[in-house]
Length: 119
Image (cartoon, rainbow, N blue to C red; front, side):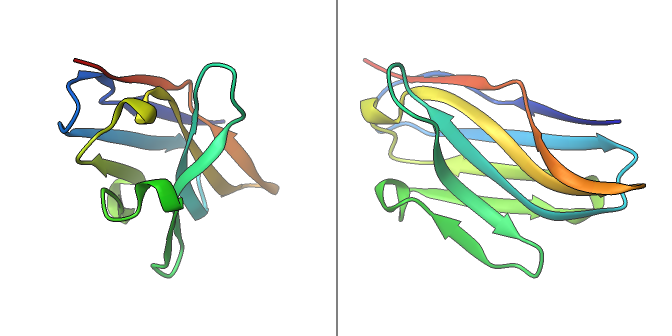
């Protein structure tokens, strides 16, 4: 079994920063890519940032220049550094990973962590 455990969400004022972490654990043979999605009330889940095995990254236009994704391969952990936060960044943030285990490869999701940007 594989688990993704997120941490680091919370309440922050506009212009502030937060760092999210997502650690994958279990019977992992390889992680193809890891990333962060978010879902605001009444909106669809959207990709925020992704890190692909090999080192390439991808960002939503709305967060380019403010957010940075990074990964610690040894710890099977992905981070999302969020700077210059705006009220429109308020959402539940979900970690996603495409993982090889013994027998198959599939997407896994974390439980979500709330990020609220408000004064």
